[in-house]
Image 1 (tube, one colour):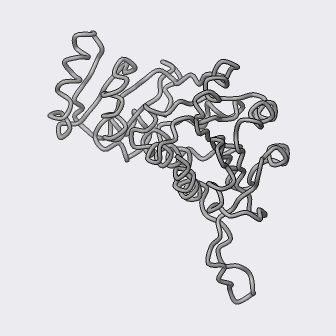
Image 2 (image 1 turned 90 degrees about the horizontal axis):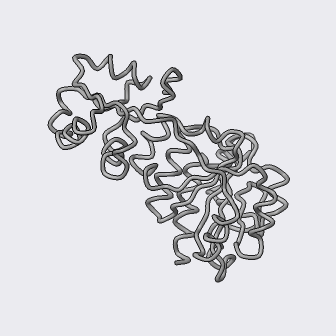
Length: 259
C-alpha cells in the first residue's frame, strides 16, 4: 500500500522486513510492530532511535492493517520511500554482457503477487536481474510484491526499459533470448542446449495474452512447458497452461543448469 501523502510504500511480512533490516535498513522511514514481534527487532529499534527515525509498538493489529492495506502483515510494517526503478542504460548493458548475467524480462506481467513469486523463485535459482516495461513498472512494485518475494526484493536488481525491441536487438548477438509461448515447438527442457555458451534472457508474457508479437519476433527461440495433456469430456486439453509464476520457476530451474 502506498502512502501518497508521504510518497511511501509499506513493507510487511517477517521475511520481507527482516531482509530490509539486514540489507537496506537506511531505507526505513517509519517502523511499526505488535508486542509479539517486539523482541525480534530490538537491534533495529536501537539503530532507528540513533538515527531519530520513528518507530512504535502498536496497540492493535488494526493499526498495522491500515498502514499496509492487508491482514497479512505478520505483525510488522516498515515504511520506505516509494521505490524508483532505474532505466537501463548502455553501461548497464555492457556490464551484463561482459559478466554474462542471466536476465529476466516480464513483458506485460502486471499482477503484483505473480511478480513477487517470480522474484522469489528467481533469487532461489540465482537470477538476480529483472527488467520491466517502464509503462507499468511503478504499478508492479507493491506491498504485495515485497511480501510474497519473502525478502528477495532487497537483493534483486530491477531495471525498466522504454524500448524493449531495441534492447533485444542490441542483446541478440550476446544472449539466447527465450520467449515462453504456448505455440512454441521447443521444450523448456531444451534451454541448456539452445543457449550453448550464451547466457539466457528469459521472457515471460502477460497473464492473459502472453508475450507481445513484436517481442516474440525478436526471440532466439520460443519454448513452452509440456503438461500431461489430459483432455476433458469435450476433447479439449483440460489445463492448457501454468500460472506465469509457476512456469517461471520451472524455467529458472532448467536455465540454472547452464552454469
